[in-house]
Amino acid sequence: MKNKGYNRSSTGHESQIEPAPIILIVEDDEGLNQLINKNLQRAGFFTESVLNASDAIARAAEDRDMIMLLDYALADITCREVIETLTERRRMVPFIIMTGRGDEKTAVEMMKLGARDYIVKDQDFIGILPRVVKRVAGELDKEKRLFMAEEALRQSDARYRELFDAMKSGVVVLDSVDDGKDFVFKEFNRGGENIEKVKREDVIGMSVTEIFPGAKEFGIFDVFQRVWRTGKPEFFPAAIYKDRRNPGSWRENYVYKLPSGEIVAVYNDITERKLAEEKVEKAYKDLKETHARLMESQAQLIQSEKLRTAGMMAAGIAHELNNPLMGIINFAQYCLKHTSGDDRRHPILQDIEQETKKCIDIVQGLLTLSHMKQEGEKTYTNGSCATVIDRALKLLAYRIDMEDVTVTFHIEGEIPEIWMETSEIQQVCLNLLSNSLDALKDSGRKKIDIGIRRSVEFVEITIADTGCGISPENMQKIFDPFFTTKPVGQGTGLGLSVSRSIIEEHGGNISCESEPDIETRFKVLLPIKRKGEGI
Picture (tube, rainbow, N blue to C red):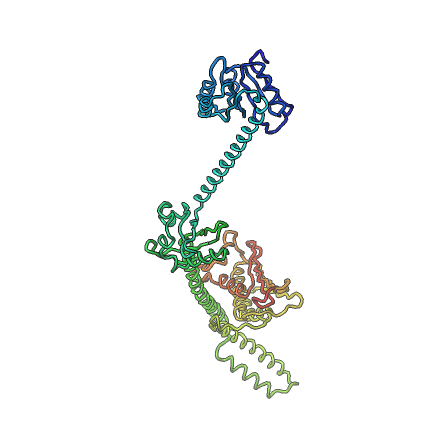
């Protein structure tokens, strides 16, 4: 490659991941060029060599890590022109001047030009050259590492500043003054500026009590001092901060100490959140009051339905429950007292007494049903569902007989007593049975099936009829208050709504299935255990 004016050599370390800088030898004396080249190779350097300034500029202009050994007196152009040309091309290559002139003026001139060192071509030149190159290479490596470290620090600082300012929370960095008696602002982020409506440059170096005059009364100043003394971080819970600039806002703070001794406070203005919480609390209070009013209205509706049901039943059996009732029972008991048990009239008198007692039971049931009970006056006892249904059937017996309805009543197995308000469960049964009778009015097959069985931890009551049924479009609305398909004046639409409320109040459930003109079946589940005891 000598005929092209340059030569590339190495010591066999081309596989290094980060090779040492290339030493570009620029010497127009070919023999000296080769001698320098071999000497530096033996010292472990990578070398390239050129014999003229033009090739030196071309090689140096390449974007590679190199050190140029530049002869002061080249044949084509001066070394100054080489450096100036590279500078114009924005290629700053570190260089060492080699010269046969040892005067001080030349040395100063080259150092001003930017030379890393200046070496005279004397008798010791070849021997000391590797040491000079090694020293310059070492200095360059240190400078490069320092630059990289400074650049990394700048980037880290830029990332920190970006994160610091991107936080919505206010962040304050404080330096202690007078052994923790006061604190001054060292840093203040953009989040703090937005919260406080002040600029960073207006607070840096200022006392915390000057910027936040309410800090001591607020209590945060004591936290700063405590954290500064102990080094233990503290959370300062939400409280209202006020000063001449701030009429009052909710703040919460987290304060900790840096290893450098500075205090950091990260804080948030949570006024909007607190106002929202207050609105929720007010809404909850209003909801509780509304619920109480609804419960009161529900109680009134239940009582209204009781009175309606009692009135309907009373109208059906009024001719059997008039004033002669007590006279009949007294007369029957008088006759039994004065009639021998062998007398053929005795069993007849017993039948009269028994049937009259049934009428008395009917009267007692009506009185129980029409008695108004407030929530706190309700009487819960262990009772039999079969007994309650039997009592409801007695109340409806006249209507059942008059409308020629067949009623079947099945009890599967042993049925435990349940904890209930008897009159309310009786009302539910009366509502369901009355609805079944209404549905059977125009039916050709008038039948009501009643069943009771145990279902796990519930007692299940089913009441099914073969009446007109419920259409699919009405099925989702049957438990809505005031919904009814009956003609005006024949129904209030409260029966099923009230019934569901009663069952749910007992911890149970009521549901319905219907096939129009075939069968409608209501199922009631009542828990065996008391409400609240768990199932």
